[in-house]
Image 1 (cartoon, helix red, strand yellow):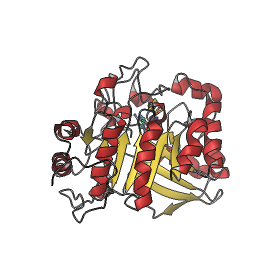
Image 2 (cartoon, helix red, strand yellow; image 1 turned 45 degrees about the horizontal axis):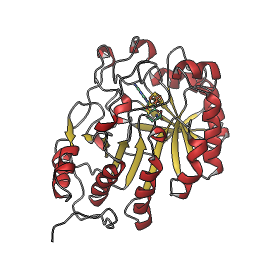
Image 3 (spheres, helix red, strand yellow; image 1 turned 30 degrees about the horizontal axis):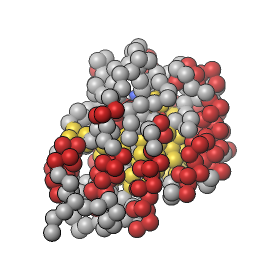
Image 4 (tube, protein in one colour; image 1 turned 60 degrees about the vertical axis):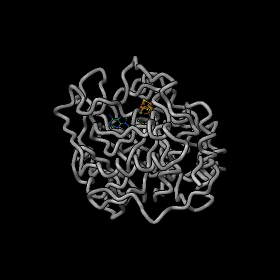
Length: 345
Ligand code: SAM
Ligand code: SF4
């Protein structure tokens, strides 16, 4: 009998995983639960952002239902992101709902990317719900620079948040965007700090996403340049670790810690891409660097049964492109018009 699937129906991954036209299995879903944020990082947002009206957002129940559809088709890893995920009202409700899939084993990992400002408050509950690792974005350890880069942030809140996460037993990885003239001289010290505190660190190249004030070519620091500088102080030992994403990893001999490089402007990772991105309005982006998106909200709301929305997901994956199209020279106007806070990176 067809009927609405209740939200508590256990999800068992089916035999038909999501395979795209290039034979890549889609096992990783990133969900941007809000486009809002308590910070305004200069490379991510403009100072006067127009955020989405709340009525356009999927409810937390709808996000939960969509995640269950993906998990039912073989997605094993969820990353909650934003905007700043921890500023969405009642976000813990969604974590609570999603954590049941960890309990059944249908989901391998539930994780999050956060700016860390609210971690002090939420870390213990996140740990209880099975969140084992989080990525915290932090571009500088200098309080004044931090305030300038984020246009308002308090570095201490982030550092306290990181400490709270670690106390709760959550493993923290630091993500830093390499910014010309801002933190380029600080990266080696940040690595020493992160590795000294048992945190991996990843450097990210600025991507041409969304209109911002200023010229992105001013912010752009090629990671090849950052890496060459790091090699003057550290011994970088390449690691084979791959996550299906755009990161390459090295071990730093002097610290023993791991350092990742995310260079999305080169095409070195598309062939192993295992991920798609869902926005808070129910749009599914098959590639971070392409405009094409599928509207899952319409299918989700058209019927309480999941057959329609599952078909919409399958159809969308069949359109996943082979690779992206970022070119920094074309960064004004932005190569891709939407902001990173829409798809969450
Ligand atoms: N607010 C959370 C945070 O900052 O971690 C999650 C969302 S944020 C959009 C995710 C990541 O995207 C952050 O690490 C941020 O530094 C990065 N990011 C934002 N805009 C970017 C851009 N234009 N190029 C490269 N990375 C960007
Ligand atoms: Fe907010 Fe994250 Fe964007 Fe910074 S990078 S403005 S913290 S969403």
